[in-house]
Image (cartoon, rainbow, N blue to C red; front, top):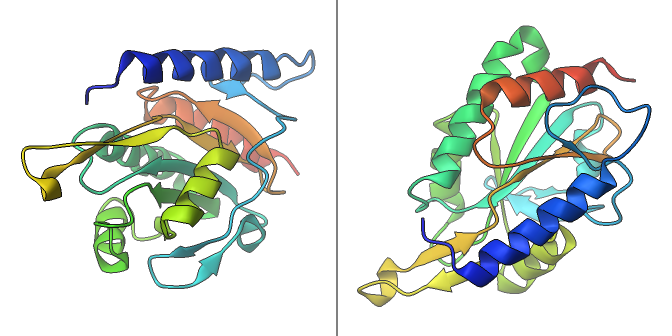
Length: 199
């Protein structure tokens, strides 16, 4: 997936800010970036692919992994979902306390039915979240996610450039970690496992 230079620069700035946010002397030995105490990513309200309105409060007691993408994504999104499915499997029975959420940045094409088939193909418990254009933009802004439409050979064959990392919330619904794209199932499993053991 091609990402314009300006988008890459903004992602690098975000990564640097996230790294600074993770400087805590007593932090656990996470393998991803600790962003505990970040002043963004505090809430969302979107419908899931079954039509039920969802917010962080719905997942109290579970570790939540949230990332932004779309079903026509050729690489980043299926790779991330496959890594998360692998991580949940590695966690064994504890994986039942992990909720993965894909927020679509392409609501025009990503119908609830399509989203449901897409995410549950990786794991039956995975959920997709969807809003209208305004709701999507608002939630993306809250999570400092950048996305933009890229024209294709025909109007319906457009693609979407987007930020590729994942956010992890602890069992209390607090944003704790940022996982850069491509870190793999082992990193997800390791860090989620730490959060599952915390009160």
